Each structure stands twice: as structure tokens, then as C-alpha cells.
Image (cartoon, rainbow, N blue to C red; front, side, top):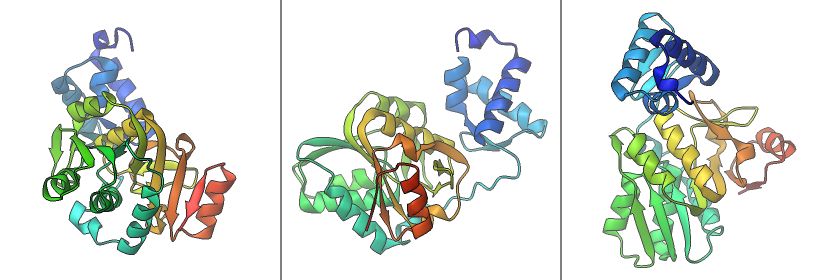
Length: 261
């Protein structure tokens, strides 16, 4: 927004409140980028909106009051739907052509993909913000797998790097393929994540990839999360393991290329 940094504070906060109502959440980084203000000013605006009862502060941003921001840790999620994640990882490898570059997000499903990539020594370049994937690269003998780690602000809960530096790192690259997962998919096809900063990273990966595939098991259709990433219509397709027939049919009717396993 041209000249947005010169907006009066009250007007800027009104616009931030509008974004919050539209999207359910806002991040400090997004406010910085749109309004041309410092992180301190963005946080001050969110603090004032919280004081007015319009927002509830979270790590890295704010959400609408009363909305749940529950998010399990990486290790809690690692043991959920493991059989489905193994099948999704196997299917994901079929999408990769030798020598391609791919984005892997910080989801546990992508971690399963990474484990298989390293185990099979697939010739590719992995770009990721996921610390566990970087650790795998250090601990595994897979000379054909090159890894580019994106750094930034560390989220210990998800073992991932987020924030402006991480976002810039993703946007500085292009990839042939993005493989990622989400917390939830809404009935009208919105992809969601509990954290706005994680959502930004996933969306950047989708935009910077020639092809983008969501890896989803049946739990992803039970309950959406706070922050919108994008829509399934933005993707090249969905790999689905044990997803209920009504959910598969709804995506198919929407024109989504969904492949079930």
C-alpha cells in the first residue's frame, strides 16, 4: 500500500482490525509489510486493539477474541496417523523427477517424506524451514539429496523457522514442487494453520513452486484452524490417505485433482 506508513495510527488500526475480521488472524510481519511500519509499531497497534477487546495477542500476531489457538507440538503430532503418513510419503516420492528442487514445510507429514527421500537417496534439492529435516540431513548418508535450510525466528513448538527472514529465504527461491500439509481444510476448500507465521511460509512455498501438492489424512477435515493459508484451488492437487468419501467428493466437485491412497 503506497504511503501506508504515513497513515494516522487510528486509521491504521481500523484497517488492521478489518484484516483481522476478514482473515481471523494477522501477523506482525504482515502488518509491517502492508503498512510500512516497524515491528514495535505493529505490536503497539495489536496491543491497543487487544485493550479495546478487538484482538487477542498471540506469538507473532493476533487472533479474534474467543477463537481457539490450540496447537500440538511437533513430537505430539509425529505419532498421529503414522500409517497414513507413510503412504502419503511413498506417493509423494512418485511426484518427484530426478534433479528437481522441492519445498518441504514443517509438518510431520513432510518429515515422513524427508525420511523416505534420505533413505532412498533420491536425487533432488530440498528447501525447508523444518529443523527436524535439517537434522536428518546431518545424520543420514544421502549424498544425492542437497538441503537448503531456511532460517529465521525459531518456533520451538513446531521446530521450525518462521518470520520475515524465513519468508524472505523462501521467496528468494523457486522450486519444481512444494509438498506440505495443514492443520485443517474447511468445507469450502480453505487451507488453514493454527499459526499465522507458519501459514505465511506455506503460502510462500505454494506461490514459488511450479507444482504444489497437499498431503492430507482424514484428520485434516475434522476441524479448521485459525489462519488461512490459501485454497485447494490454488494447488496442483491433493494426495489423500483415508479421507472420508464425502470430503473426497466435495473436492472433486470443486475441480481439485485428488488422488486417494
